[in-house]
Length: 257
Ligand SMILES: *[C@@H]1O[C@H](CO)[C@@H](O)[C@H](O)[C@H]1NC(C)=O
Ligand SMILES: *[C@@H]1O[C@H](CO)[C@@H](O)[C@H](O)[C@H]1NC(C)=O
Ligand SMILES: *[C@@H]1O[C@H](CO)[C@@H](O)[C@H](O)[C@H]1NC(C)=O
Ligand SMILES: *[C@@H]1O[C@H](CO)[C@@H](O)[C@H](O)[C@H]1NC(C)=O
Image (cartoon, rainbow, N blue to C red; front, side, top):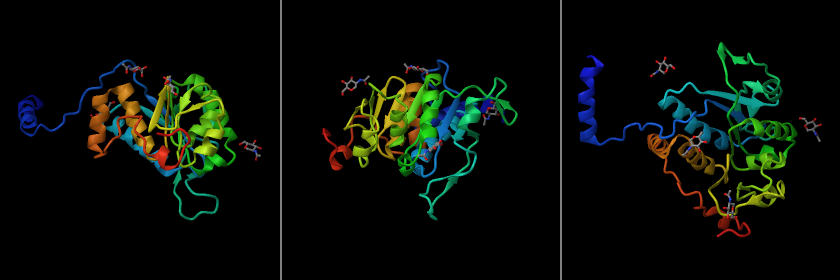
């Protein structure tokens, strides 16, 4: 059957069932096409795979041509586990920090020429308490070059130590609040927030909050209808209000309401 013959049938079907239809992006001003994900040993799995799954679906369901580069200090598989832990998973980086920063204009991956990274995602996890000086330096160098920076959980401590959050509003994991906020004495840490948006920096609260922050970011950049469609497709109950956060009080974060 030709698609022209199919169209009225599909339209009638949609009316009968009132099933959500994939909405167009409401914002089409040069959308980001290259995402960078920073990883380090003992990263928190959900900090990475929650947000990345949202972005996987965004790029799959809208069939975009966007790229993802997974960046680490070396190309060795990067574990979610503590040193010596048997209960862990590994992710394979596609480029080192140094190789990305030293790439030339013919920079490519496989046979595809790639644009520069526009969105940098910085997860957290127990490894943020180890030596992350290479990760801090990378964020410091990259921040002026990207359009958006998204931190999840204690990933904000890497961004804070890069100096990027000075004078800005941000949030981080409420369970690790005292240590995490000590890494950024000049940051206006928000004690009651699922996530915080300050200019081109999104920072989320602990672990699962990264999923809500990512839908919030998709809503900001691609449009709310698209964000809600993706959440509905993933059968995810979003927290859409960044100010709704029961965990600050639960973990006795000073100033939390
Ligand atoms: C997705 O887009 C590519 C071109 O960028 C095209 O070749 C492919 O057929 C599209 N796939 C679907 C399922 O629309
Ligand atoms: C931390 O890591 C950096 C580079 O990754 C290294 O140069 C430095 O010596 C390390 N610092 C300590 C205290 O191990
Ligand atoms: C930063 O947070 C303060 C509250 O602490 C708020 O009044 C201000 O509007 C926020 N600024 C931005 C840029 O979000
Ligand atoms: C549209 O997207 C651009 C580029 O990502 C962003 O800077 C801008 O804030 C968005 N506009 C709106 C109205 O959300």
